[in-house]
Length: 312
Length: 312
Image (cartoon, rainbow over all chains, first blue to last red; front, top):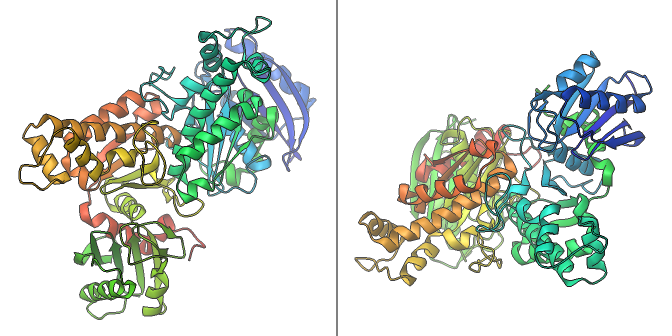
């Protein structure tokens, strides 16, 4: 058996792969933008080429994958919302065919992120933990009693669809007022633009919005506050239901730091009043872009906590 | 070892005790109103007398208790909100002293209800299940992967404090807009009274409000709809976060039946749009007043699912 696992992170923006050691350390890492193709095999070929960059021709015997959802789980047939090339693409099966005898496990990328943070990041030592990603969407993963929660169909952790504004904006899911509809990066940027913010250099994004906010632009500041409040409210609901030790918040929008976390914590404190809820810590994620890779590796390297028996 | 366990249910309105068989069947049952005393030992004596009615002098070797919260868990020092006589009362320790050698387990009464419904009621066969009680308060208990969820401090399942009206009514917990503040029985009755409903015979309660609603009183109908919508919204949030198979709703207010469940399901359907959420069944609880006793018995009779190793 190798002393490393192959970890793969498939997202709408980038593909990443790494060799990860048994202790969760990332040894070799490679990434590239996700090809804009609609051809399933072209994307598959791009992924294989990236994998070859980190394996250097050695044959992996354990492969963990985080991939954008939705997917059929644990089958690993993936239909990532932001990757039109793959619809019901048999990613797990393809990897097994490519690496006969290897253990291959595929799960939602937000769950991989949460697992990575629990195993080696901000969630270490928290038996009851939620990892949240605030990016193009709002996703998450749950660890309860030191075990990842999968739910009936592998979809536990979809905290982006906790309702925070019952009569609020329509969500891509078809619902109304989900925290994702309010606080996902593009919604936050659009909220600011509708109120008169325009990016200094013409590039409207979470990054430029944060720059404007740091420069004191009141609309930009208010946009992060609006998003933070929505997230804080959602977390108060989830923490009440689950009695968690800690929540880690990561993803692109979390890079805004206190601009987001200040209003987030204030909203959480306003709504989470029971003693046990007040005791829950809300902290920034620690592993940054590596969280998904580390978590993907945990599916095969620390399966007793992060992969349910019988789901192979 | 006896072929039965002693089950005890301590609530603000009534005390109940039963002998429960290994298969969850209730053999002998007794109940009485909770004494209005503020003397801890007087209440304890009343409970002992009730227990004697069902044990008939036989010594129980397994005792499961559901009790109103909050409590220190698993210590079983209880401070039930609606029972001022007991503040940090060492219920578990007292029962152990009274029955040396017996296994004694005490947990939140809403968790006992949920466990009862999972073991022998509406949640049978649902690996990922939420039981909700809508009564004087709104409480609940969670089963995930066929195991009860306790959380960091034994407080998991407090779904009454999921936020459904961010700028809504103040909640007894100190928060704002919790589903409990909107949908607990007394709040529903008060909502109707503020809008002109008065009970035909002068007794304003959930029961008489339901009678008025069945008689077509539009304010009474709207009051149940308002509560049902709040509960449906809260359930949409919890189901999104946890990917549950089923939710059972019980408690006094649930006796209103379709008056509550119709609007509840409609609100759930409006907000729970992801495929996996739509697949979650919402059903009435089945065990009625026995749910808490059956669940309390499950803590000692089916501990592999309902009591965590190491929490004795």
